[in-house]
Image (cartoon, rainbow, N blue to C red; front, side, top):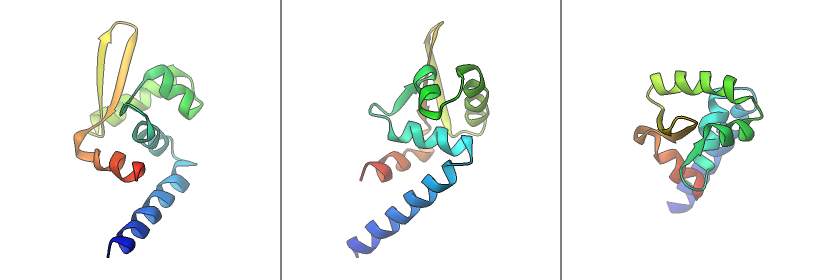
Length: 96
């Protein structure tokens, strides 16, 4: 049973990775899920998805409105982006 669950998880991750090639929203979510600390700065996320911070910020704001990411701004020039707890399971799924 455990082997079957692992195979299913691998298939889901593979599907998400293929979808992320064309969809910037999925690329952003997958990049955050893969991050070491569970969050990325706007600049770090921009590097991960190969897009300017200004453009990435627009997508992050939309994802925040949808309740998929959480944004903290501890400093005027620093924006930290986390996965929302509702999809925190994705981080666990990818790390396995």
